[in-house]
Length: 275
Image 1 (cartoon, rainbow, N blue to C red):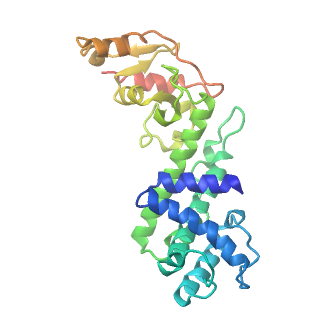
Image 2 (image 1 turned 90 degrees about the vertical axis):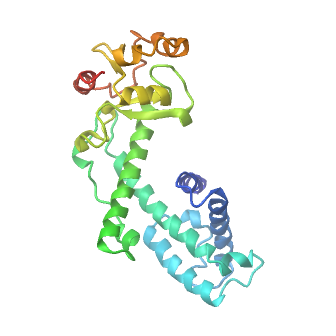
């Protein structure tokens, strides 16, 4: 239960629901709603905590019930912040929780593509379960965009989580171990090869500056996983700061992941484009 609450909290702050104040209000709304339902005597009184309900369809039913209850004031004659039901916070929070659960469940399905030392690429384009709940009130074009963006966001999250896991959350060049500034970098860009976009062999854990340099083909890796600097980056070595930051790592072997070694084929393709 605590895990689900934490995951939802992370989700709403990362998706920035009109600022942290609204995100905090949604969290509080869901906490209070569980208490209100318990004493309501209504259809959903047996839900002691919203966090125990992990079915998007069940939350959708509750969302419809609460939306109507907010209109009439029914069940909200309690000491719990009356402004919340009058301003529709309970239904809004439930809608975001429902959408979070759809993404959370899809992320779990994608995570099952990884085993100890293998990646099942054939299942990479899994359908988004319960997508009808996401797009019910949208036209065809809007619905397609929402599904595409949702899948893209979840794919990125799952890939990042796997890359941080196998690299111990540390930049493989600098050893920097602050997850917030480290990036799950793709060797072959995400958009170029849909078939390998979730393959951890197509990833490196890099701090933001090295990620930017790698992405722009200013830094690469040789056949022995040693750092190569391009002529394009050496042109800036007249500046002592630039030189010290990059020259010190030239020829250095990166820290390799505990499994899923970076693909030499894809590193060679990246290396061929060094500027």
